[in-house]
Picture 1 (tube, rainbow, N blue to C red):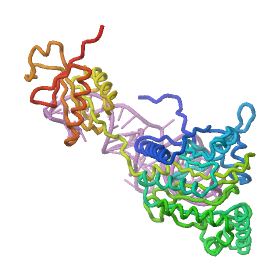
Picture 2 (picture 1 turned 30 degrees about the vertical axis):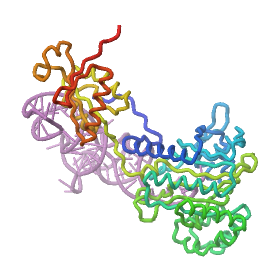
Picture 3 (picture 1 turned 90 degrees about the horizontal axis):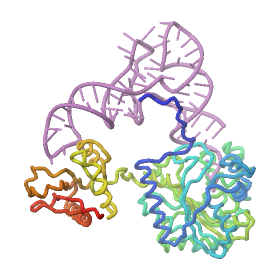
Picture 4 (picture 1 turned 180 degrees about the vertical axis):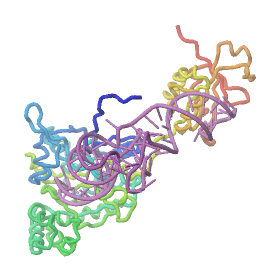
Length: 459
RNA sequence: GCGAUCGUAGCUCAGUUGGUUAGAGCGCCGGUUUGUGGUACCGGAGGUCGCGGGUUCAAACCCCGUCGAUCGCCCCA
C-alpha cells in the first residue's frame, strides 16, 4: 500500500542483518565450537561488550593507529572513556586480574560474541562482527600451545573446512624479539629508498610488518631479510621445538611461516594463523581477508595491565568468515510433519495437535491460515518429510461406521513424502504420540488414516 | 583516510546514440482451471529510476555534489 511518510532509518555502516542460510551457517559454527571446546575442557566465560578504553589502549600499547582510529570509543555520562571491545583477549586479561582468577590458573576459557572495530567494511570485514575465542591463561608450557592449536584444528575439521593450513612461527622471547627487530631495521634501512612508500613508514612505526607487505617491491628484500632463527635463544628454540613436535604428535599439520609476525610487543614465542591455501576454494570465498583463525602467546600482556607476569596463549576466529566456508546449509531445514487443514475452519484445531507432537520432540510445520491449496504449498516449501491432512468425518468415509461420526471426529490422513523406513517411523511416532492424548483409531486396512476424537475434558 | 565499480518495483535485473503513459522474470494478492493437489491460464497491487543541483525544448540515461553499497589499499589487536 502507500508508503508511510516516515523515513526508515538505515542500518549502521558495517553492521549486518544475518538471515536465512547465512544465519544457519553462523549457528552451525557456534554450535560446533561449543561442542568442541567441551571436548578440550575449556570453560565457558561471558564477558562485557565494553570496557574502559584504558583496558584496550594499554594492552595494545603505543600502536597509535589502532587506538585512535580503529576503536569504537565514546564517553559515558560520567565522562569516562569507554570502548566497545575490539577483541576478547584484553577483557579476559582484565577479568583474570580483577576477579582473582589466578586461583584457577592455569585456566582454559572459551567465549564468543560481537566484536567492534571502526574500519571500512569490505568482504569478510565488518564494524560489528563476531568471534569465537579460546584462551589458556597461566600456563607457560608449550603443551598449552599444542592443546590450543589441536582444538582449533579439530574445530576446522568438524566444520568441514578444507584447504586451510596452519601457518606457524615463533617470535622468541623478549630478548630474541628485540635482537631480531634490530637486525630487520638495519636490513631494511639499507634499502629504504627502494621500499614501497608504505614500508618506508613501517620502518619507523612497525618494522616487523614489512615482512607481510603485499607490495612486489618489498618482496625481494623480505626474502633475504634476517631470519628469526638466527636470533633464537636456546630456551626459545627449545620451546618452539616442543610446540612443533607436540603438533606432530597430535596429528596437526602445520607449515613454518617465517614472515608471520605480530605487531604488538606483548607477543612472545608462538604466533600462528590458519590461512586458506593459495588457489583453494576457501581462498576465493574470503577475498583479501584471508586469515580464518589466528592467535599466539602473549606472555607480556598482564604486566601492561598492572598485573603480575602471567603466561597465556589464545586464539580468535571470525564467525562470519568461518560461516562463509562451511558450505551451503539449507535455509529451510526439513519439517518432519506439515499439517494441512482440508477445511480452513479446522485450522485452529491443528494447534493442539502440533503442540502435543512438539512436546514429544517432533519438528512440526503448522499453518496459521489460508486455503487448503495454500497450506499445501506452504507445507511443500517447508520440505516436510510427511504431510498430515486433517478434515472432518464425512459420509463418504465408508470405512467408518455411522455412529462413530456423532461426535464429529477429525480424520487424519498421513501422506509421506520420504522413503521407507523413515516414513513408517514418523507415522508410528505421530500415531503413538497422539494416542496418548486423544482417542485415536487407525482405520482397519489403512495404516495411514486415523480417526481422532478429543478426550473428554476434565471437569 | 585513499581508490575503483555500482545505486531502476519486495528480490534479480532490462531499459538501445537523452525523446511521448518506465519494463521483464521471480515473489505477493485475487480469480479460473486442476481436484489428492507445489500445475497452467487470466487479472491485480507495488517505482517521486538513492537524494540534491545543473545542462537541454526534453534526462533513468550527460555534468557536479551528496548519501549508500560492493571490492581493494592503509590498518589488522
